[in-house]
Length: 426
Image 1 (cartoon, one colour):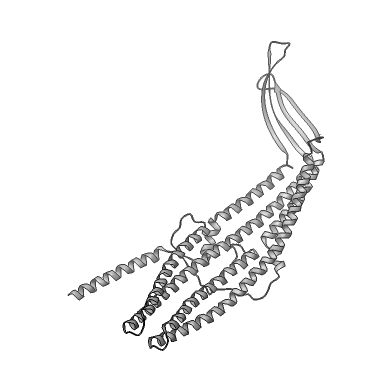
Image 2 (cartoon, helix red, strand yellow):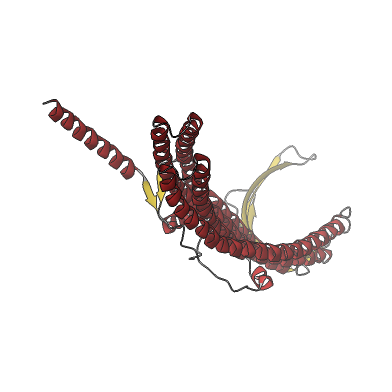
């Protein structure tokens, strides 16, 4: 009867545990890399900010274009006046429409429009560069969570193995074939393994928060990513780094800014030419409302400032300095990009090669551990030799995981160095 009761209690406990595990699994949101891309494209604040900068640049271009279009305004006026020779006051009412059209301003307005168009291109390239940076951060967060999930599995396996090893040493110690120091060492290794399991779980929580941030989420929820650490694109052909740098959106943004700065200098020089406007107005005026007397005018206005305290010269000097700065920034950006591209490509190739090396080490460590565990159980090797080989197995598993992770991260850095955006499909 007692055995039957214990069996019922065991089954119920197992059933409750299964429900709990199932609830935890169902509570986790599983995301693929494609899911992360789509969500970041919609919600990432950095991308939204870059979009608003682009809209501002387009608005500035519209403002520049408006200067060469007719300027039309209307007005309604009422005034009261009194002369010193008369005691009575005079009321005047008027309303009308006036228009002004720019005829010539030394090509300042066309230069401003062209410069604002280049600034729009620069903003478009900057948007792509921002998207590229966000992709790198998102991919890094994704891979780190993927690594964390795999590391948890590895540390749990290591913990089970350390427990088995501690049990073996305990049996040998009880049989008088092993000393207390070996037993305590095995127990300490098991405690270390349990700690690393807890550490891996906490690392996953941090990785989940980081991924949530790069997704643009405001709340952190349990996440799990679906992916394969062995899914690595291998490209061994060395590309032209200078050609890639020339097509990088960061460099193209610098080139557009340099062109805009050159047009800005021409615009500043145009300030030395007179401004010519055509003017026209029509309306009515009278001493009573509504006014009945028609009035109109048509004319041309030419204006030329004679003295402004050196403002125009200062603006020219400033524009020259901005152009020189833009030229220097473009050159520096091109040189830095070429170097970065070669460095990231080299790091990626090294990381790919390292995977094969670490895999060989892991296979060798697994085989040695399998052999030495049987040898230690039979008393053929000492505890010190056995534990060294066990430690090598643990380190080999972690090194192989780190090599796989590093290959994916360096691949992401290589894509970012080329200017790959969130639309990048690889």
